[in-house]
Image (cartoon, rainbow, N blue to C red; front, top):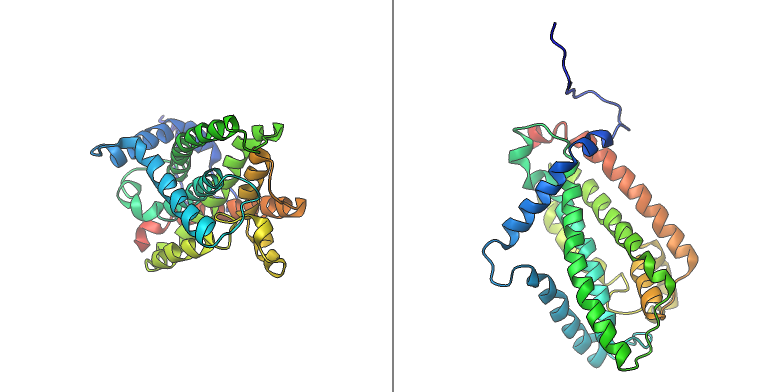
Length: 279
């Protein structure tokens, strides 16, 4: 009598996220990370060094526009350190968001041909972005050491060890939002245009190119409900010893991130069963 070792069924509990299956297929996460890295830089001149070009150029531009022309303060933090950190964290967030939001359309060929836990793909995308963030963070530490040697008033605290937690915090937020949006963009492709435009606008509602202390008091509620404000400002507080961050903003951001991630996982798991028929 035949005994099946694996049974694949479309019927399952809505709250069953198949996390055990993701763990069993964890080797696929490594494979997808390697695939995406090779495809992105196989025929490039600088390879992974491109990870550093964008934040450096953006930081220089922000220094000129916001630091010199607009004369917006940075809480005493050197311009390069201030803008580079904000750009680095915001780029990590938007990369997780945009890639996760397009997970079905980018992988429809492989999704429609073979079974494997679909959740391994957005996880691999997020982990792959951590590699990019790590390279950028290493350069930030070089700049950091330079300014400390010069005697600039940057004072890291012991809470700088929480940086991996901040990375997971931002990654969970970006991935969760992306998974929610992916359930909509499979049916309505033009929402991708709105998403790209919305991401650009959202940066200016987040303390990326200015500190939270420079925001007008009457608009402070915008930053409180914006879950990306807290991790970016927290990074500056614990690494530079400057900044302003109310505890309630951290609590609201963490609760919002957890809710968004949980909702995104549920919608993704539900949508993965029918997306082939829609696309």
